Amino acid sequence: MDETLLMIPGPTRVAPRVLKAMSENIVNHRSAIFGQILKDTSQMMSDVFRTTNKSYLLTGSGTAAMEAAMVNILKKGDKVLNVVGGKFGQRFMQIVEAHGGTSLPLEVEWGQAVNPDEVGFLLEEHEDIKAVTVVHNETSTGVVNPIKELGKILRDHDTLYVVDTVSSLAGDDVEVDDYGIDICVTGSQKCMAAPPGMASITLSNDAWDVVNRTDSASYYLNLKKYKKSGDADPPETPYTPSVSLIYAMHEALKIIMDEGLKNRINRHKLAAKATRNGVKALGLELFPEEEVSSTTVTAVRMPEGVTDGEFRGTMRNKYRVELAGGQDHLKGNIFRIGHMGNITHRELITTFSAMEMTLRELGFDIQMGEGVAAVADTYLPEDV
Ligand SMILES: *Cc1c(COP(=O)(O)O)cnc(C)c1O
Image (cartoon, rainbow, N blue to C red; front, side):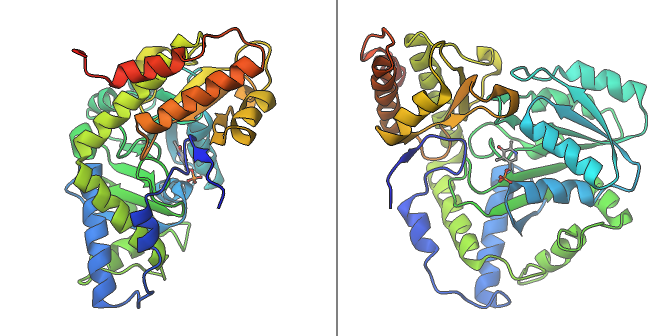
């Protein structure tokens, strides 16, 4: 297979150990042996979510978990405050509307983070807000939202706190219990470095109270069924899960545990810092302010005088490094470097070297090696 280096915000590079786990024999999904794998996988998911509540696995991509979060708590006309500062914030809003809810969007300029006080003001103004949704790491803009601070504000309100951590869990600080998050969702193919196709969700007792009082408008994503099967001993899923993908998740989570969650998050923070330093050294401009810049994906303004096709096309076709483009109105205006999952200095040095060659070829007057040196310097200990 083509060995293009994936430097995109998902899917990310998958370790050979994980790929190998997927090729294990398929077993009966209603057996003790599979029950044990499911139990361990769910337990490790809860450990990564940093919650004492149970986590459930859904066969589907991250969006399935986003939809499950909404469809199980909403009745027609229920009001949800959606923080919308990019593509994924918008998606939560569209899911609410698709299920007959009323979205109250809090629009945040793309490239900026939400101001938690604004959420507080809206909650004072509207007493009937059933839930607040926020995307922790807005992958489309490379912005990280202040979910800890938001949690402090939401603590004083009778509303469910729903957080999308699809592109941050296992790559940035997420403390579900500590931040008071009621529903947290994630996907397999971002920082967890598993193949695409699985999602996970965890709910607080307050969230379960609402779920238990609500008729789910979805049959497949009815969380009451996941809870009933998942809490059995041995646990099961209500319908046939993707057995092979659960093997993969199990192995990817074991890798996370081996590395240590804290170490892994620090590795992501260092990769983000090295990337920003490399970008600046090449005279390129970061899209979001550095203070709100993501730990897992860096968005960069496309330099004047080059098209997205020329830049990312050369990177991909000639140097075999895949970067992500912008979405919607940011298409052609930014590019994004994903550094989630297994990314280390090795991949970043290759990426920056390829970026330097590409930019030079496209006529930019840059000093070869400056981006690479800035990356390397970030990784070197201070006393070297
Ligand atoms: C990738 C992503 C999703 C889910 O996308 P899928 O394609 O359904 O896996 C949701 N939210 C964020 C922030 C993401 O980065």
